[in-house]
Image 1 (cartoon, rainbow, N blue to C red):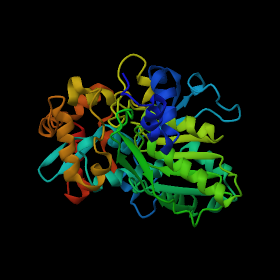
Image 2: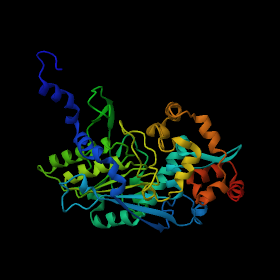
Image 3: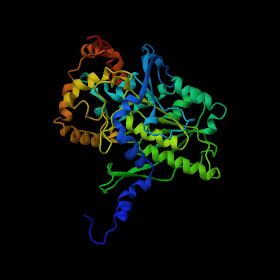
Image 4: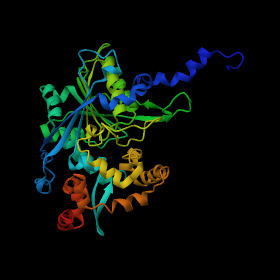
Length: 422
């Protein structure tokens, strides 16, 4: 019952005020969440194999020249069952996922080489600079995919003026501007956008947060910019949606009330399916095409209600969501019954920039499933190359750039080769 003298319509307006910050909330709550169970079935996947080169000439190719081809999955989402007003001239969004050594490292884990031995290290506990090394290398491979080369071809002739890379400050280490230079010899515009989460105590807000966008640093962005690459991992999708809205607003101001945007390109090292759906619908509302690029963990399940923790999908019909389904067997081996609940990264930013905080938050999350960091590491150390092979993965596919660096640093390359043959 409403308190005497209250006005229900006014209470509703106040309760829903968080929606005024972004179109994200309306799309997520009214379109995607009610039909979330449909999402895996709306993805049509194709898998191929590609070879990738070492395009950063400052890195030695000696350690990666004998790598085998890697699986590339392209998932096309048909979201017209969710968003009935999808424009006819906007193609279906695509998610390109790589199962390169770094793509597997960032999604499930890798072999780590220490002075006292070699063992498997789950991605959520692979912290700091090694994770950043693998992320940068993954980006150098992603720009070589057929899908990204097509984007570069479309923009050819005005690439340095009409394509812009924007790093969300929460994820500045994707290194996309560098990778494009290594591939093309051209420097595209690069800028930053600071978007931060702000706690929202409104009980009507299922996410418990809103996003606050500081001003986009747009002084180098041409008014006729057509292609915008946004770099950030995607869980719920709130920050990317706000970044797109910031771009639309900025370019309309520069361009007399209109914009020339054709394509949003999202470089998300890991990405949830529901987050990608929300982002794609928001882009479609703007009349803009969208493509996602990421690792083997690029169509994850963003757990309700806050859509932050993202494990793999499991169950019937889930294998088409990752280019290397065998990684889910590794996840199950290490996390057991919590395999479909434990987030691949936990605290996504701290994983790379503040290891002590990442460990603390990981411990807190694992505790809710009766696990601990120590138990997870102990279980991971029992995973041997022979078991990985039984799961259907070549053990050498878990030798990432970070693994090679450690082996060289500690003088254990030969030991690593012997270990892989066990």
